[in-house]
Amino acid sequence: MGAGAIVATLATSLMVTTADAVAPRSARILEGRSMAGVSLDASVRLTATGDAVRSGVPAAWGRVRGGGCFEATNCSWAVAGGGTVEVILHARTSRVQRVATSAPGWRGARGIGPASTTAALRRAYGRRIVRRTTCGLNGFGGLSTGFVLNSRYHGQRRFTFFELSPSGRRVGRVWIGRGRAPAGTVC
Image 1: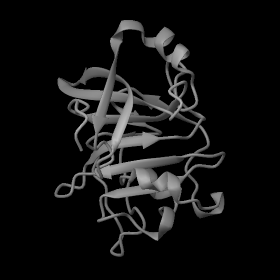
Image 2 (image 1 turned 180 degrees about the vertical axis):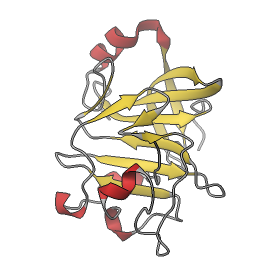
Image 3 (image 1 turned 30 degrees about the vertical axis):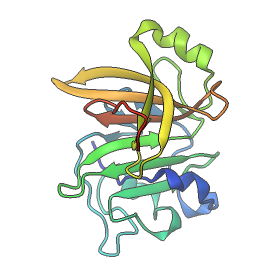
Image 4 (image 1 turned 135 degrees about the vertical axis):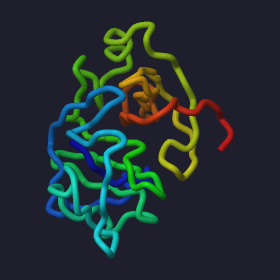
């Protein structure tokens, strides 16, 4: 399965009503592989105007938030019940590079997702997660602090990044992506 269009972290600052999108209220996160059926490396096609996805799972979610995808690579949908789902595409290949969500109903196999406590995250993953400050996950720069879970899928490096809320006590957003979550504090 697959598809996606990617989202800018700016998306959370743009509020729309749930009537503007129909991304699922709850969904499964497969660490380092997919969210709600949107797989990393899936090919995605946008409409000619760049404001809707023509193929893959997100096509059923409706028009993207704000009426368009930023540079036809970063798109966002509101999620019924709160939060957003964001998809970032490779500019040349239109393949999914990263997917992120801040929707509290989206969870991984260990029950961790947005709004989970940091204590629950540590209990669920133990030493497999590493605290990390990273820059530019959303393609626009900006620091993110959280915990990274590195993995491999079909021999390729993948990551799941549990970005912390400003208080540092809860998971604010979960990212999955190809390669490794970039380390560094200089944006």
